[in-house]
Length: 489
Image (cartoon, rainbow, N blue to C red; front, side, top):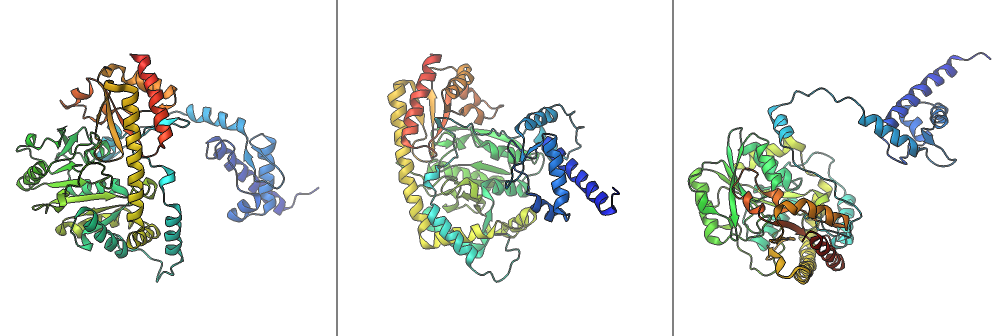
């Protein structure tokens, strides 16, 4: 039988589709049991006849790459995935890329990210929130209204954020944190991390210095150091940053968490706050005030933030909803000095134009209606109960073998096991993990070059988050942690 030109073209097209899909499958584009597009959908996407795709799928099935079933989409065969993993692992490494100075610094000192372990009885990881706390109905209602509202136009918006949200934030910051500002001083960002990145790009050059709490938030240190600036670690005590140690240090900015020092939990007293502001004025430096979890206070009265004090013209206030609603939403905000507002807006525009507008509109609606405030009060009560459950469980299981810091506010505490030398830290983490408990050492948050690091080398200290756990999980997790500690004693 003579093959027509059209039939030859179909076969050639099928071969190309087959080879492309085979390479994607072997490169793990589709995971175990990964679904491929239906033959109709792939044909429409590629502009070919459905029969052409069918021929390609039949060849893949015949060679064992995929499994097909009538009425269902093709599925990657399980046995193929393991072969693909072996193939990817055995590939020769690519040549060393020529990177910018920023890229080289990041390659030498990358931030740590580990996939959260699964299947744990209790994971005391800080920064995660309980799904049961999320206001699903309120958020769905606000998002639905935002999407249903007929937009005047579909276009890019103000890089500083929607006027509606910035106006709502202005009122919220005044009533909740005594922060007075103009609407155009507020810049909405994709989470506090982007806020830090903008500050780093605008305020630091290679060779500059910046002050960091020690121990402190390592993602801030990484962000600033990636510019080529040098960290100057300043020790932290029971009152937060030891401002007396700053003296005449020359630096371009200082990063602080004065309302609830991360990770040790100190609340900086008013005297030290004024000392820090005086240093900043003298050094002509900026202070970045990260107020990351100020909504959670349990046994202390709120102290006005640095931004609310006299002489705070060079304070940049950083806030987020990651600890109240969800870190998945990626919404934060900066309150910047009036002289910098246009510059920060320009930097935000260059980075990503603006933060997604539907989410901004939904958050604004919740702030305007009081729904957000009511949600915060409810979650504050729940987290106070979780914290108390954790404190009770730790004291019941360990007695005087545990020393706890940072209970006045926030979503974590630091538990020190002074009887366990630091050299047992890794063993404790492994043993606890084997029992189904996720724990995280405070030692990782100290600057490796600083004298303060010696404190973390004397005993095992754990940063214990509780906001993602229920009371029963907390109690069971502490019981299993006690078993792990007892194995090392």
